Length: 480
Image 1 (spheres, rainbow, N blue to C red):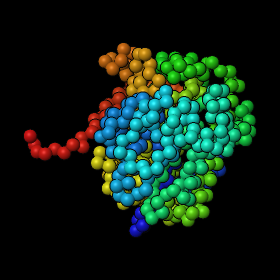
Image 2 (tube, rainbow, N blue to C red; image 1 turned 45 degrees about the vertical axis):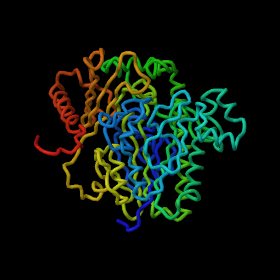
Image 3 (cartoon, rainbow, N blue to C red; image 1 turned 45 degrees about the horizontal axis):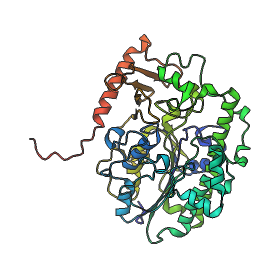
Image 4 (tube, rainbow, N blue to C red; image 1 turned 90 degrees about the horizontal axis):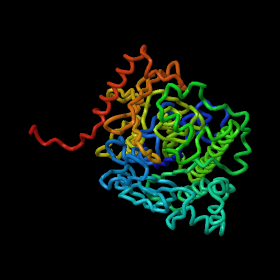
């Protein structure tokens, strides 16, 4: 560990699947800067988020706690002021902390300004999304100052217009500009920093500036991963979601032609390429300022995107790998291996304790993650955690009849329980996949008699994991 505390640059995208990255083996997507970052550091190939939906997942990142403990169980729920964020711990230890872009630890619909708890951020350039008017939306303020009239014109024309703004006025470019300004100017130069860079892309709506869309031929991109009988053995909620997304509030997969689905994929890839270029600009600035060797760089995303796989779009109660498995890259020159790929199952709650450990700062009092540095360096003496837990509690646009799902991946097996009585009046159902022979999760073994013993084993393991991850952080004073 260097005697000088390292800087921390945490770059997080929104809704980027694990395979939307050239370094992950996708030859169709153009991400040269992220691929270079992966070669310079460690890429964790099996990183799982704690929820397939934004706010609950982001709360797990910031607190290093599972959903059933931090309590931010759905979008539109404010985080409890009693929760401890890792950035506040860093700020208390002398770090200069800042954020640009989305945060989403509280309700932000209909122009509501997301409330803040003690987060440690001296600089807070918040913009929940590029769409809704809000006087606290720093992106809108920047647009009005630099491109007068463009915001009103774009909002009047709808999401498509603002998604496809020219690069120089785009939301993702603004994120890059604000981050570069922090690195060059507004950081407190006598302190180590932790700067959180929260892109909104590649979240829907699906649109990107023309020069990035021009990188892709939609017809040459792979078709969605599915089969004719994909939905027949899966819970009924997926057939509903195939018809209409977001609990019936947005068009579904079945509303689009095959060509239109390919166009959605091309626009999604274009958004990833746009943010890849912005990451490249940020990392170049880091080097120009002489900060590259002293800065830990993290790249990740809050959850995935169905993108037509399994005949669905967007997100929701789905626990497929394309929904809950995300990129995770760590780079710290001369401290972490280069061009290394780790196959162990890791979780989003592991990021905060890892960064606090690198900073030489005491951990979160109620944090539940593990230090990935010990995993990489082979010094982790604790019992290996060979599983990942993800929870959905009617968390996205709410279904009228609530939908609750819980996923456990252990080794090559994944179980997803679709809960029934008494949590909801929906019928209890589930999914079981053998990822060793079915990595695309096309064959649901939940109702297959030959897989019954494996299903019982995985359901039992899930129950044990839920008990093991309960919050028992309050001190026990005595035996009675």
